[in-house]
Amino acid sequence: MTWIKFIKLREWAKITSEQIGYPIYLVGSTLYKEVPRDFDIVIVISQEEFELKFGELTENNWREILVNASNCYYKEHFDCEESLGEWGYVPLDFKVYPDNWFVDEDKLLLAKPK
Image (cartoon, rainbow, N blue to C red; front, side, top):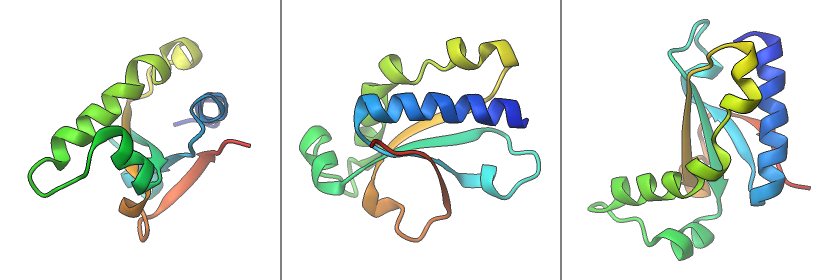
């Protein structure tokens, strides 16, 4: 990712974070690989609020709930093609996770609501 693409991504994250009221992070291999396969973007919601919105995460349902949570935000907020498209293709992988999933994980804050 070039600096121009990163700045565009950060601009999108600032706008989106304000709209949804949650912080947005860059996570995964993007942080340590010279040429990552994709860029993992995560909206982080408090566990309590996450479970109120999407249901309690259990060993049997966590995949389904995470997919539903991500789909909830995807169509409205994750269409970056308009804001990033002029700079070329950036492979983005969007997720929505509860905050207790990222306690000890490396992450880079892209934006948080004011």
